[in-house]
Length: 209
Image (cartoon, rainbow, N blue to C red; front, side, top):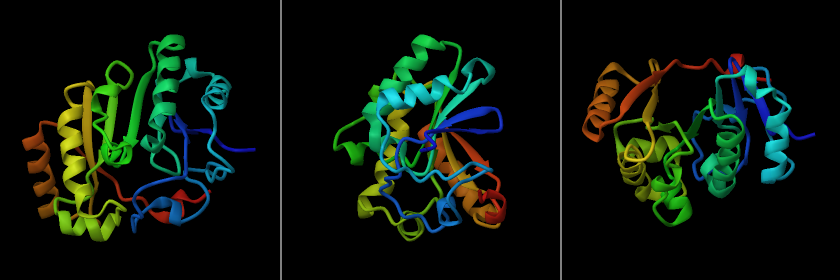
């Protein structure tokens, strides 16, 4: 049975796809089949909208404050499905906070601007910035879009803040990101007008299923 949804702390996570345009050297899915005690998040196939909704309905959503689109892949690889499920959540559970964890490459994936499509459906976009340096981003994240990727994610973040109440860019703290690079990332976020969040470094052994 596929794990379409799973729980992390006080949130329900949605695992839409295993596709991703990046091959990050630090990706948690390199460490095992699941994270935070979940069963395998490798999908046999991509679930339909109906299957995602059915899985969410089994999670007793009234007991959770947040649903997060984040699994073993980039959720905006299936943007239509993501937004259809978000519409259902808005209708059936209007008080739920909806967050999307993304690498910020939705525009390149879709081949068109995507930020306006999130309006009214997503409360928070959490975008992985990872580094203040475009060249280092290429080495760390190895995007299939090449050098177009880093400026595209910065542009997406700037556009998204016009449509989504909260846009956050994230990096991993020390020892992955030095204090100097953290300051440079903060400067980027200040220029764009979004918040920076420094994520704690995850010990791989803590994240294995």
